[in-house]
Amino acid sequence: MTSTQEIADPRLKPPDDDDRVAHYVRKDDIVRANVEGVPVRALCGKTWIPNRDPKGLPVCPICKRIMDNVRNRGSN
Image 1 (cartoon, rainbow, N blue to C red):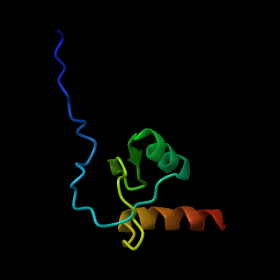
Image 2: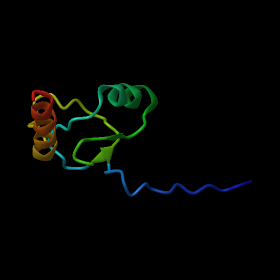
Image 3: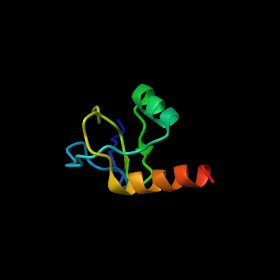
Image 4: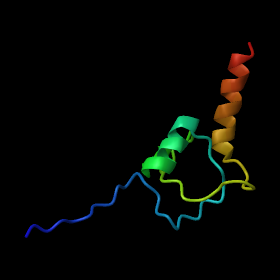
């Protein structure tokens, strides 16, 4: 019999992470994460496997700043 060992991915935040903000993530990535259970990466760089609805949470200030810059660049 072969034994296996689970190795934690240091780039992922644990599920009990106290992150109480919503992050901006590509829509296709969210769909894939919900279907396949794979991690997503937010604009701010946070990588995690989504497991709760962010509705009602404040937006991550770093994600918001990046998204505002992208939107402003597109309006020029």
